[in-house]
Length: 141
Image (cartoon, rainbow, N blue to C red; front, side, top):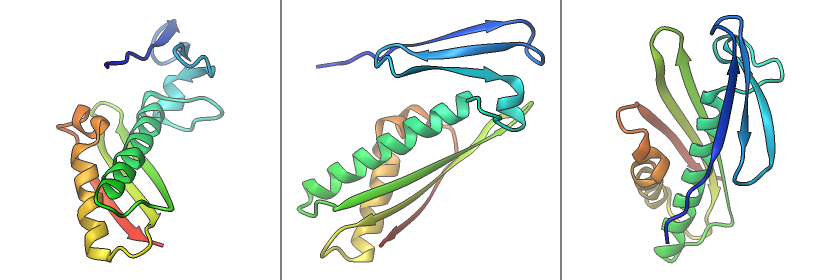
């Protein structure tokens, strides 16, 4: 069964001096401020499209890796993933780096690396971001 999630953005003014908000409407967990400066300089308590992509990618990747490991008979005790999305003004998103650390009893480092790479290639957010360079640093803890 397909699901649809909704977010809304509201923007006022020109790009460089304007400001806006993004609301997570499906979950109703919040509305967040956004500005060009929060995207291209320092966040200063505001979010950016890249931070929202990082949140989506790190979560999706963790879920995909957990599912793949469990399906192969190696359910993880824990999976911690950080996604770093790089934005270059005038160029756009230039790359995403995933760092994953997981505890998977009885799994070899080679088998974990294979599962981690498979999750990187096949999680739905990675699929949606094809065309963007995605790198991975994966290790067992």
